[in-house]
Length: 311
Ligand code: UDP
Ligand code: MG
Image (cartoon, rainbow, N blue to C red):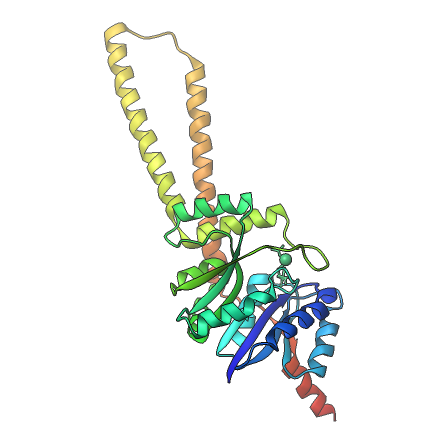
């Protein structure tokens, strides 16, 4: 009997937990040869998510949870879940039922019978995500699948490889591609959330995309170097040409517009270059602190032990 752990990062999903468990249980009970465990990671929810999780895990020993001391972000929740998942196979999915549980049987088959180390779900990409994808794939040596989500089914080997990447600023989709194993992709239609609302605004998405690029590529740094070199070269040619022209025709009427343009243009470029440099230095700074990715407050195991002590 193969052990499967379903890892679900949840942040304020109280109203979705019961429907999520109902739908996933319905699908999983129809698959033979596997033992399923649910491992929820409560990412510092402020609604009744934790209370619901306590209740569910008390009722069913196959339902476990970890609970963070505050909101550390989905990426940290994913890492914690993968670290604590004990299964031979780990399925990572959202708790809002936007990742269709009906894909689980074919994903499991791909990993256990078809020789893939992982199976992932991809959806029709939004304009923003298509743009990010094509920039990323041009800039980075790690190619991302178009529309890829982090709804993934992974072998133990794949999970262990991902866990070796312990950087604190995580971009899981990129890490899943970085480890290099073959992933089988399944298309799906994204449904609206079962309840509640998405935690991603545009600015959060934009930063996420920028992080994704700086995490995997230093090409932006090379581009500013090349642009700098080209401009210096052009300036040098311009200086020589001006000198020769002055020798031949004498001193021109001075014009301030060209000077102003040059200063503004170069000033802008220098600031841009400093900004790009800063993005990388910021990453080094955050990474060098080596802070833990999350702090646990309680878990199904931790809490049960406490109760035993009391009895
Ligand atoms: N999530 C989380 N921590 C956060 C934000 C989200 O654990 O800080 C969880 C959330 O509860 C859900 C999953 O990550 O299970 C996906 O989040 P959401 O549905 O908001 O993202 P979207 O589907 O809009 O990409
Ligand atoms: Mg969602």
